Length: 92
Image (cartoon, rainbow, N blue to C red; front, side, top):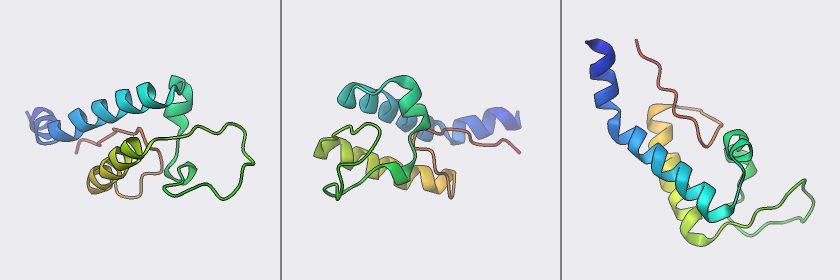
């Protein structure tokens, strides 16, 4: 029963995770593997300072706002998580 209780208590987190996952894929055209490997340090929430990168994906301001909101939610559940699309909440 404790696994179920933990899942239910984190349901809002999972719903937000699913939303941001689909939003990010749809709005950026990223491949699933790219999105899965995306780290917070990869995202420039301001105008890029350099043009040098393997692949530059431009993100609109609405998506940046959604990502910032997601980061706040994620950091409450997974403190110090570097992956943008991580949802792994350990069950104790």
